[in-house]
Amino acid sequence: MFDLVIHLILIIISVCVAYPILHVTAIAFSDRYAIMANEVSIFPKGFTLESFTYILEQGKVFRAFGNSVFYTVLGVFINVAMTVIMAYPLSKTDLVGRSVLMKMILFTMFFSGGTIPTYLVVKELHLLDTVWSLVLPNAVWTMDLIVMISFYQSIPGSLYEAAYLDGASEFQIVRKVAIPLSKASIASIALFYFMGHWNSYFLPMLYLFDQKKYPLQLVLRSMLLESSGTTSGASVLAETALTPTGVKNATIVLIMIPVLLVYPFAQ
Amino acid sequence: MLVPGLLFYLIFRYGPMFGLAIAFKDYSPFLGVLKSPWAGLKHFEKFFSNADVWRLTFNTLRLGVLQLVIEFPLTIAFAVILNEVQNMRCKKAYQTISYLPSFLSLVIICSIFKDLFSVDGVINQMIVQLGGNVIHFNGDPKFYLFIYILSDLWGGLGSGAIVYLAALSGVDQNLYEAAKLDGCSRIKMIRYISIPSIMPTIVTMFLLRVGNIIRITPDKTLLFYNDLTLETADIIGSYVYRVGITNKSYSFGSAVGLLESALAAVILIAANKICERATGSSLW
Image 1 (cartoon, chains in turn blue, green):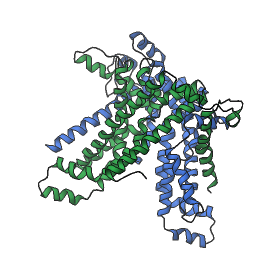
Image 2 (cartoon, chains in turn cyan, purple; image 1 turned 90 degrees about the vertical axis):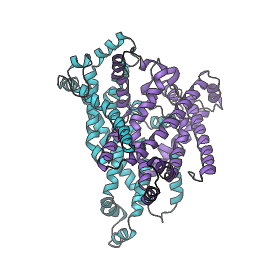
Image 3 (spheres, each protein chain N blue to C red; image 1 turned 135 degrees about the vertical axis):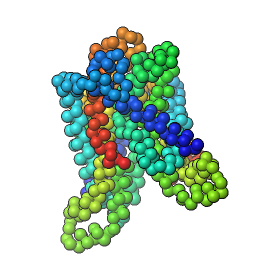
Image 4 (cartoon, helix red, strand yellow; image 1 turned 90 degrees about the horizontal axis):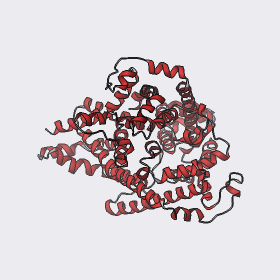
């Protein structure tokens, strides 16, 4: 009885979670008449790729996809590089001033200058409307830094010493000892950095002005804004004229594909 | 090796903190942060003399408290229920499905919920089939918070549960065995073994969240609200964004943001004190 109730609750939750995702995917692959008639549930009706071919022809979403890939690849590369080369020295307990530095870093988790002062720093460095505005202001996430520091502390010091005695420089030790040993941890922080960049819309909205530079999330957002506030039947019709529902959902599917590809590794 | 990382923290983390000085200045883009003239508490006074201030504070607190009293316990309940599943395959399946939405962006979540609740969306189709009338969910302030919280749960239940599941897996299984021999029911085991065992985790998570009943990042609000729901939906964060960034009132926006951060810090410190007295565990 108890088990039955538990499975029932969890099945209901799973259905509620899965249904919208399947619905979106089904709409993306359905033809426009089935969509307009509200006939699509969780399976595509009148299977077609017309929404995707429309995206290819129109170019806006396609360019945004390229932008998103570029920002994400560059962003994750800088994140991982910065985090690793910072975490390694901070993992050494004999580092001069280590406790002060750690306190200063942890403090930023609880207190920040806020959106506008950060915006002004980016502005005064003339980074606005460049890819660097998306990459540099969050080059290191303190949570991920702490994960890496504690990993490097768990590596036996004798491994570093051996390399040191063989005449390796600190940089060589990082490259040949620390990084190979921490591949799994690096992969896990890279995954979170990837999700952060790929899914971010707020920072691009703050820092990018040129529509040509928009990532996918912002293009999807502008599709949403076209249809927001629709309460009367008239504006609902207007909405379908601006961005067809099928195209919007095809864009969502495009955003989801890379995420679903990395999802199995996240667990 | 430390130089690039430390430069980052100095410029992009400590820089903005000193940049908060513009909350007490009249920021001018031509003079920069340092040379802009001091303005005293002018921007704070302006905020408190604004008729919107209490509505904004109330809206923010209402949303924050709702998130805390609804989402926080439900996440724990979900983890506890999931932990009761004996069949490992089923457990894995439930977990995989529920964790998926936390990998979707806010924009996607917003799009999904707007469509679900739109006039010709799935929810309204069900209402019509059951003989009801179409409801304009997205344009009605009454439903705004309901949809907001529901979308939070949809997106966050799976990922939120992970930390409690980890804590639950650390509970000594002998306790359950002993309770079983004494004829203890499953519900009583949850009540007297599972929950008390993960109490320290619950307290820590509570404290990490509690400051956020006033400091709510506006990214979700900025996507979900529209002109029709603004009255209910507008929170301090979205107001700062509109006034500070869109209207370029940098000093005023910073002052409001600073007030928000200060209030969040006061709430956190107070909650930490109370928890320390009540349960003996605290954040620091």
